[in-house]
Image 1 (cartoon, helix red, strand yellow):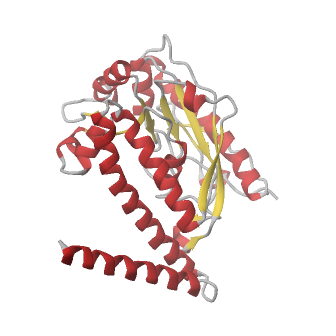
Image 2 (cartoon, rainbow, N blue to C red; image 1 turned 30 degrees about the vertical axis):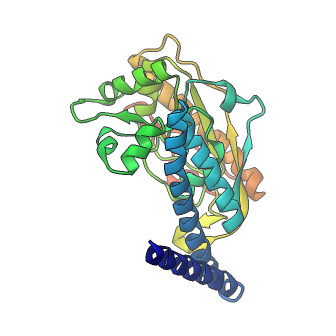
Length: 305
C-alpha cells in the first residue's frame, strides 16, 4: 500500500510540474498553452471521476442516486475553473433548469469541452442517456446505473421510436430528466452552426409526454479550437430557452418538432455568439431535407461584413 501511495505521489508531482512547465512555456510559444490546458483538463476529469465513484455510492445509500451526476458535474466545473480558467455562464432568467421536471434537455455539441458545459448547467435530477450494453460494464456502467442514467436498448429495435420506449417509461416513473445532443456527434465548427438533428430525443420527449428544453451554447472556437491548437481561458455564455410542450403530440409530429426546434436553436446560437465575440454573423438560409429536418450548408454561415 505504501508503495502505491509513493508512486501516486510521484505521478501527481510529475504531472503537476509538467503542466506548469507548459503553462510557462505558453508565454513564449502560444501553442504550448494548448498542451498545458489539455493536461489540466484531463487531470480535472480524472479527479471528478474519482469523486463521482464515492458520491454515487453515497447518494444511492441515502436514496438520492439521481443527484450523483449533478454533484460530479459541479465538482468538474470547480476543478476546470481553477486549473484552466475556462467556465460557462448560464442565462436562465425564468429558472427553467430548476423548475421543469421531468424534461428532455437538448443542446448543441461542439467539442469535448461540452463535458464542462454539462457540469455547469446540469440540473438536479437529470442524467445522460447511454446504450443499454454499458450498464454491465465494470466501474463506468456501475457509476451510470447508480447515478440514474437512462439506458436505451437499440438491440432489438427497428427504429428510434421503439428504442426510446423503455427510456420514456423510466422518465415518467422516476421523474428523471435527461440531457441529449441531437446532433449525435461533435461538430468542431469554427462558426455558429448545427449539424442535422437526429430524432431520438424528440421521440423520447413525445413518448414520455414531457417538455423539450433547448439549451444553446455560443460557438466557442475563440476559446477552444482543436484543429488550430487553440485553448485559452475565458467565459462562454449559454442560454436556456423556453420549454416546448409535447402534450398531445404523437410520432407523426416528430419531424416538424425536430425541424422547428433546430431552427429556433440555430438562431439563438448565432445571437449568443455575436455577443460573445463582438461581431455579426449572416443569418442562416434554412434548407429542408426530405425527412423534414433542416440543415445549413457551410457557405451560409459566413461572417457578415
